[in-house]
Length: 170
Ligand SMILES: Cc1cc2nc3c(=O)[nH]c(=O)nc-3n(C[C@H](O)[C@H](O)[C@H](O)COP(=O)(O)O)c2cc1C
Image 1 (cartoon, rainbow, N blue to C red):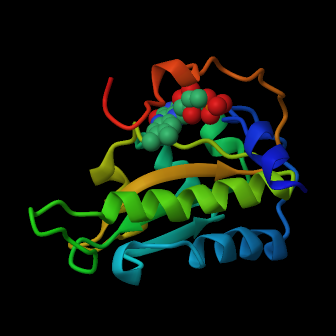
Image 2 (cartoon, rainbow, N blue to C red):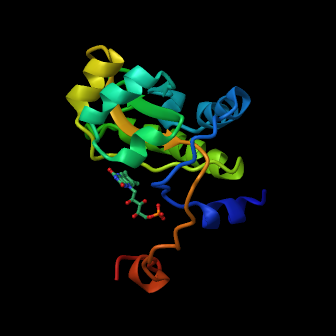
């Protein structure tokens, strides 16, 4: 699929079919994440692929929306602070790196006809416990992964005038 069609066609999907997602498709979207750029090529990320119904059920306590658990797959992207590149002023780029890799996955999923929804409003300690994430690794974002059972309209975005500036801040 044309890249620009993928970008403009992506939506946050909050209703999923129960149809399974083939392992090859899951591997493809993870490969898109794997080759993402990262500061200093540190790749400070880990992706947990959850298909086990019992574990998915336990994740309800971390983000209690029915549509979240009905997708056949959930993916949790984690950051590893000790691996990420840090600028001289102390600014750490781990969330940026994880987000780039995650967005590669999201766009690849769209190209494969799969739906996703970035979820940041989860309880991190519940996710840590259920997924057995060790200290030093942080869950950053979750998404369901499955076939969309809805076609949401595009949500409103800023106009260029509201976020693109010429040469200096206006
Ligand atoms: C970092 C991040 C966190 C988000 N967290 C949530 C969330 O917790 N729950 C949710 O339903 N949507 C969440 N979203 C989805 C946004 O609501 C959605 O991207 C935005 O409304 C634009 O809609 P669209 O993705 O369909 O274009 C999140 C998106 C991002 C980028």
